[in-house]
Length: 289
Image (cartoon, rainbow, N blue to C red; front, side, top):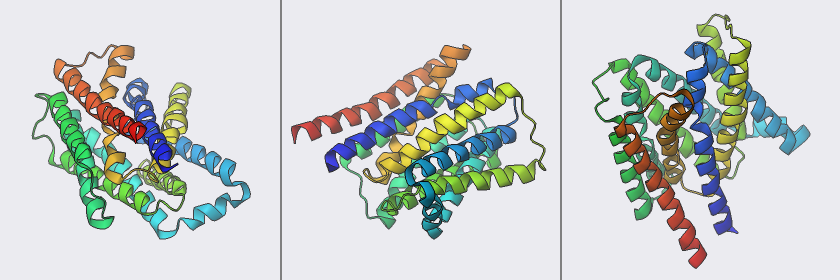
């Protein structure tokens, strides 16, 4: 049963990474400003999480939200911090710089998990992390620059915020941490609402796109991450996120005709091969045993 659940967790992470990789395409199609789109994405994500909690626990949903306690509050704060600093990084430095720094998430997560959870990644996992990160470096090509110190700092903070979130969720895997996502959406909406002073105009078309982005894509991805965290270690959880970076430019190319560079395609292919290759080896090893 444990082997089956581990395989299911891997499949969930692969599927959710593919789904959320369409985020870049959605952002390209949106006309709203970054803060406005982030507010409505969080709003619809909150709605999706509320629906999931009610469907699963019905009247006991409120008890489950309260039950996450301080770990849930901390996890929610870290996830909200990651979302806010990511947006700041994307708007204050180059995409290449942000991508390069975020490529370090599996390494930071692995280090924190080793210190606090005593989780030591296997050699194949470490090799996958290194190859995938090398793929990220290739994707960037000549795009990496010194850039804005503030933007680079925000990307670094995103890396640490999300890594801490992953470790907290993994440490509390015996508790349903889905309410932590709910907490993060409330914090993001509050911060964005205050920044915008309550002025959050959005067109009907953009509202539908935010519904797709937050309510469907982010909802599925966030829930999958929580489920998968119960069966695979923290470092492995974050490896699959690199698929999002690799596939994102492909969808923008196919649907918006924003042609990626050869560096981007080559590096992205290396990331995909590394992550999927690791998954295939995992499934083969499990089937043999």
